[in-house]
Image (cartoon, rainbow over all chains, first blue to last red; front, side, top):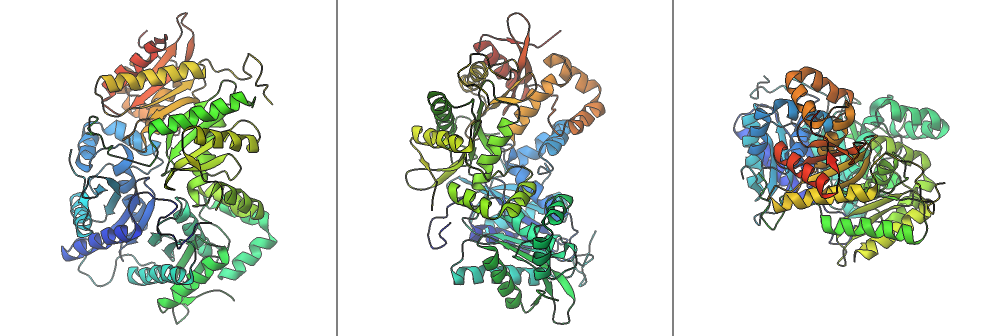
Length: 155
Length: 155
Length: 155
Length: 155
């Protein structure tokens, strides 16, 4: 059985729970301070598996799945966040098919942002849902930076 | 769109994000202080929809789904936690079918506990996975109590 | 767009394609030299996503899914391979439910083995299907060792 | 059980593992020599079942499914590769429905190419994902030809 006392976890997917919690809390705090609608935030590891999720009071029941699909989708193709969105606008049918193919874990709109450390290593991604997709992305970026990490937005 | 400035959320499923966060953090703290294996905790509202999830470093990729299935399953039939487990042992085939019927969001083993407030109102449920199911339940109960809420275990 | 000329990949899930290919080829070579039935081998990264798959001539159409479910399942709970199997024998109903919960990507029988490097870091897992589950595991272990890596079998 | 010593495999779907491996390796080598983004390649037999898959370092987690959907889709209707794409452009709603109908295993964009032998017999198909769909197809064709086989592109 996994030894909980060991310093090195048996399974590692990049981002730690402490880092993911800081990203999620930073995202919700940014949304609250900017007066955005209630946000839902999901942070996933490099394998697109959920590490932390928080759904604000007043957010609808589907918001976690939306935020998770943004986060998982942000890692699906190996692109930075804005490349993702630009391609989806040029190739809408292809991207609609990808959502089916991914079993719904793929939503190529703003609000899903890959997370890197200062050295450029990929740690995971954050997905945000609740306000306009531009505001969702603004909150996601603020959350990543509040945790001392780096959003992967372009090239 | 939801008015973020209003005091009353547009959608209410019982437990608040603040309460659910307290339950989740209390569960993980209890597991760490008792030396349990790395735990994953999911708190759902009365509609069995995720409000908070946290997966400890070193926990495998399926743990969030396991914890969520314990939490959602704990509310599926309207029974307290231990009634659930007792019935599953008497009627294993029926409960195996329920897991299929629920699309996997039903796991009738210890570690899923309905949450009530002091007045007895149902607020949601917590599901825990990572150590033995008995220890998972112990951490769940500790988390609920750390948040000033009441686990619905029997009758 | 991803820069193919950069030394550091944009997305990393532990095992490299070169390592995964060595594990897969070593597994099939071990099976052939031992006179096993035609094997199918799948190597996944730490996120349980496929990196390499090879299905031998004569293997049925479902073998890739079986091998992938063994590999992904080997990482699902954070346990070494034999702990996994031992628990499944003690708790058959719980583990049957986990297969449903995982959408089929979970098969707790011998033949799925987590892969670590010499320093103990998890890199991914290999799953093998085609002969008895004991022989499948034997080939999996031979493949991991042929690649200079370490099978995580116990504690 | 299958007799591993017999020369004739119990199950035949056209392409052999040796041929499929040559196609996959040829595809990745072509992509690397041309400076394409990291590619993922899947080779399927005439039953559209996976024989070989390889995902390059740095490719996102969904790439295997995308490449497999291109390969499986290339065989779905009995058309050569470019007929497929041309029809999808004329009938986008019909092809969107086909993707749903196929459970996602159908993606009618360039990069999925049926494979034939020199005598014109269908052996399977290859699907490639990672760069633009035109470059994906270019690498697929190069991989098929590197294996001494024939891409079925037109008529």
